[in-house]
Length: 82
Image (cartoon, one colour):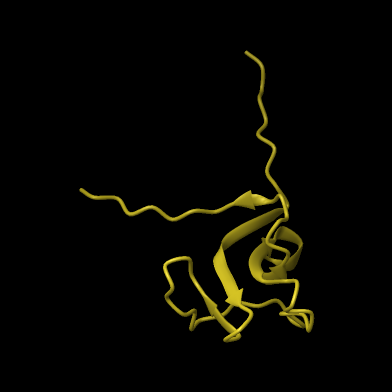
């Protein structure tokens, strides 16, 4: 039996983006984000380009504003009905 290792990304995208017109960060369902977990010095001043939220392992999984077209891993939430 051989050991198999799963490649784990160092960067992840989470559900959240900035409306460039209103300057409000919100989830995909439109709910405004009220509890932020930004890494120090985030979000960047360049919010005209960095409109999505990412997590970086190197940042202790704190938030980073990122380009929406970055090809990062995804973290999704699913409601489990029992």
